[in-house]
Length: 398
Image: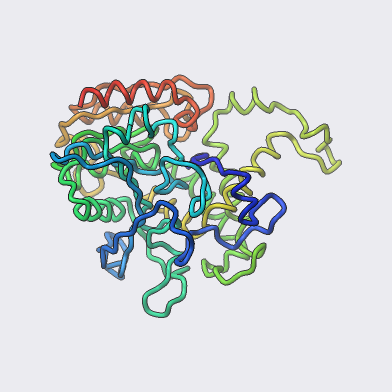
C-alpha cells in the first residue's frame, strides 16, 4: 500500500534490527512475542468465500482499542488499515510494535478521531502478519506455520471476521468506519454486508472495484516475490536471518512505492541526481531515486511478511463491491447513510475518478473531498492538515 508507519530507529536497534543487522526471514508477529497493546479474540472457524477448503479454522483476531464505549454504545469508530498496516493505529513504536501508529496524525487526543470522545477499534486483517491468523501463524494440525497452505482470502472474508469482532465487543452499529486504500475497500464492503450496522463511512484514496491497471501493477509485485528462490513457495519460516525472500518483497515494495508517489514529485525531489556524489554511469553508483527505493525495500522487509503481502494483494485484486450483486451502482444504492469520500488529486494508484464513481453511487455521500498534493497516493499520510479538516467537519455532523 503505502508508507504507513515510521519505525523507531532506537527500537529497531534495541531489537537487533538496525541497518547492519541481517534481515529476518519474516518480521511477522509470532505467538510468544511481546503482545504490545494487542488484545486477542478467538472467533473459531471462519467461512471462506472462494477457497475450496470452505473454512479457515481456529481464527484469532488481534485488535487494539482506545477510549471507552459509552452507555448508549453509539460512539464506536472502526479504523481499517491499509495493505502493510495493522491494528497499531495510534501510539509510539514500542515493545510488540515495530512502528509507531500509522495514523497518529488522525487519531489521538485533540485529533478528529479522539479517544476522549470515541471508542476506537482497529484490528489486523485475516491473512495479516501482526497477530491475526495468517500465513505465519501456527497450523492447528501440526504446529508448523501455515506458509504455502494458507488459503486465498477476499475482502469479504476480512469483513466477515470484523463483523464477528464487532459482535464480540457488543457494538451493534459503528458511528463511523474509516480507512485509507485497502481500509477504504473494507469500509465500502461493510455497507453491503452489514448495512444496518454502519452509521457512516470515510474511504480515503480507495475504490469500489479494483481496476485492470491496478491488478496489473499488483501482479508484477506478486511475481517478484514468488520468483525469489528464497520464497521457497511460501515455506520459508525456518530460514535463518538473511536467508528469507527479502529480494522479492523488496522489489515488490519498489514497484508499489513508485505508484504511491506522483511522477512530478519524484522528478522534483530526485531528478537525475546521483546519490552522495557517486556516478552510476558504469561506475557502480546510484541515482538518488534508486537509493530511495532501495531504502523502502529494506524497511518493509524488516517489518512485514512476504506471504502476507501475497495474500493481501490477492484480496485487493478480488475487491469489487458489485461482484455478484448486480454491479457497483446497484450494490451501493442501498446504502443511504452519510459517506465522506476523499481523493488525492495526484493519486495515480487510485485516481480521482475512482472516488467520483463512489460518490455518485451513494446517495448519502457529501461529495468528493479532494486533497491537493504533489505527493500522490501517500498524500493521505502527508497532507494531514487537509485530511483532518475534512474528517473533523464530517465527524461533527454525525
